[in-house]
Image 1: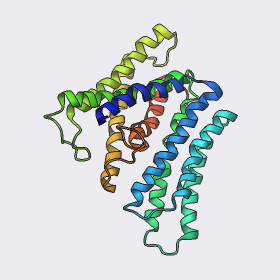
Image 2 (image 1 turned 60 degrees about the horizontal axis):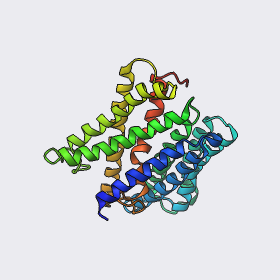
Image 3 (image 1 turned 120 degrees about the horizontal axis):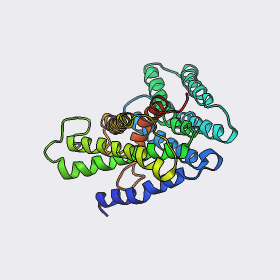
Image 4 (image 1 turned 135 degrees about the vertical axis):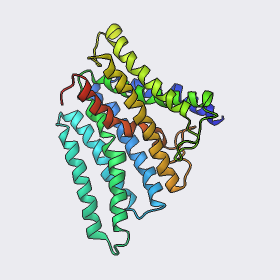
Length: 286
């Protein structure tokens, strides 16, 4: 099976599976929390390997435990009704532990800055950013918000690829981080994200009797544009990380896509942005 067929298979099977998990509201979306926990650990493992090929880095088991504490705290908050601020406290504690570990265990200090920075980045990128999905479970009508967050990202990614294949042959290479990306692909991705937003704005109130994107229509258009840009930049950011590490993919876990980090890069980057947009533009209190 070629890569295009594998990618389409993941699109038609994987995306509906993830969206279906969102529609399981039991124990404050515990299924979604568990998926985020597993994805966080796998992505952190791949990122540790990538960064470790070029930089000094702390032991993998140590970093993965600290990374996993963050989505685990999200699970505990969901099950026990704890306030989401405990996730932030856990992130701060993880950073302090990283610095303390280096202080206590380092035998030479040439790579100490590198070890601290790489470990902190893994915990931030693969751990803390993921917890914003956990924080979304406390939104009113959380199922719809999480589903549309994922649809923003998935539709942007899919239409960027589709438009790039159809119309991007003569407008590639303007971003060195990913020479195969095209202007047509970027436009298609943003168009897809805006389309998802408009569907949520007009169709959800009509057919589901639920209002999630209220206010003026320009707010959802701006939200769609920002979500499209964030999904694209998230993908390009991981391209920079891979180029720096001189690898093509972060792993080989997902057919046609590469590793877990290749699949969640846009989600990781976009989650805190969507969380902020919902609080800023729509009637969800901080």
